[in-house]
Length: 189
Image (cartoon, rainbow, N blue to C red; front, side):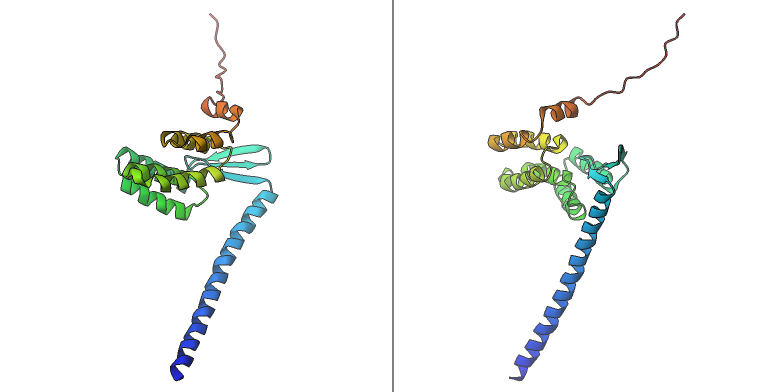
């Protein structure tokens, strides 16, 4: 009977510890959500682009911040891709996904790397692509490459479905961005 008391006491301590730890994690998530809400209330929208740069909209102005942690990781991914280091890409993408879960480029490169590593990874890659697509609906910088991969994988229904989430105007603007014309005064002789 005595050892039951010890086990019960240990379980109570373990439960208390887990409850305390859960409260700490919940408070961290709440603070992150509060920060997002405050930014939204002030009219600040920050979106991480495919290449890791941040597109920041505040009021009527738009700014792009290119020197970010995500953009550094993006450059590393490209170097690993150029070196055909598939395992390195997967490891770096896993780390980036943990650090920046709302930046979907690492999910994309991990999906490509999984397929290149072994075609039997197709189902896992498709799950990653679907997660990106569901979280970036209408964003051509993500949806267009994803649709191209779906097509290459023979997933034509998925390609058709997600391609419909992007307007033709957005696709045109993405494929052919407006150019700033250089207005130099020409000197006449």
